[in-house]
Length: 238
Image (cartoon, rainbow, N blue to C red; front, top):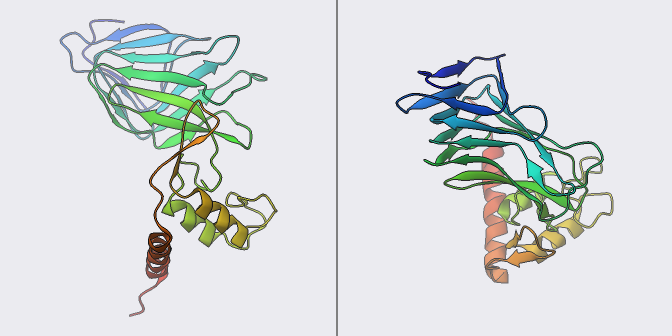
């Protein structure tokens, strides 16, 4: 499909298939408020011009892990502006291993924004997905879970402490149960402290160490987080 001025895929609409959508003269070729998906199986959909996905938009892609890694690709010869949802599907029964990585989107003139919602294939308890945005592509990588990374963002930092503190004593939602004893307790704080500053290293069986603060600095950090947590929970009575 070439020679367009601009293709507007409205909410509830579907753009599906391989091939090329191109705008003559450059500029935005496709604005997505509905669903964009390459064709059945592993396919590439090329955009000749800029691609913009709005908050209601959904980009649906397939990945395949065997016998070789393959995936759908949105190849943009222009700029990509992202929002909305990224939905990735994996065939039933296929296994994802640490280090598996898929380039889902490329853009020759840069990538801005991020996907607001992610719907990704389920993984085991010791592995999780990271979505990595660069100036020219978006990659999905299976990364080893670092003990203490309670918000699953591939780094153990003060945000994980906040999650532990807010869920202290819980026995149902155990995302911050770092020692696996069935309750979020002081032992899970020790797990967080032991691994504070570590950054997940995709494709390896170990986490990379960032600069870990001295004990005094760590205490000050915890105190600061507690103060922020308390201050944001206060209400004003007129």
